[in-house]
Length: 250
Image: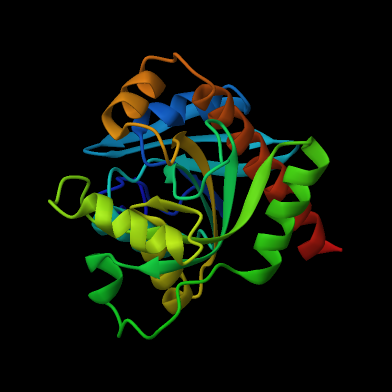
């Protein structure tokens, strides 16, 4: 019988796994499985699809979080309850700066909290930042693999379709924000409050000058460099977990 079965992710603490990759899209779980030894699906409920597997001897979960900070927060809370204490988001984003191209990677050094999920936990003056050591290991992995990446602040939001989207993007672009997603701020904030070490690496699927709907549709149809970026971010996150694990046991 499964111990401590969680109501949404539908996993208990039988696995004794400390590391998790968190894609938003359940389909990206399957993409990550290709990099793992002995991948096995262990749960699939609502937006939460989970596999287990090993990478260079380190056991990991890959759990999808769905779209947005609310569902991400549920995944963080429930994974923490079953013993996961290191979580890396492997997500997608839109670029907010010129010159950042499809398939480039953005490693988040912090996040603007324009989301509702993190607000539900604590005042907005609380910073949304990753674990420092985990951030360094992600950067090191990207460098060693030769992937093009940027490191800086991203913005997290809750909608693609308000009437002011372009003005909002222009405002944050002028402030130097690298890209926008919907989950990183919740991951960083809730993870920090719960004692979870977190980081986020994002694959650019829409360029600043690009069309949102067209960019996402092309990504899903595997028509451009964003699919290569997805592979790069998965590999970078897995290599970071291995080096971080070695750091902890050395």
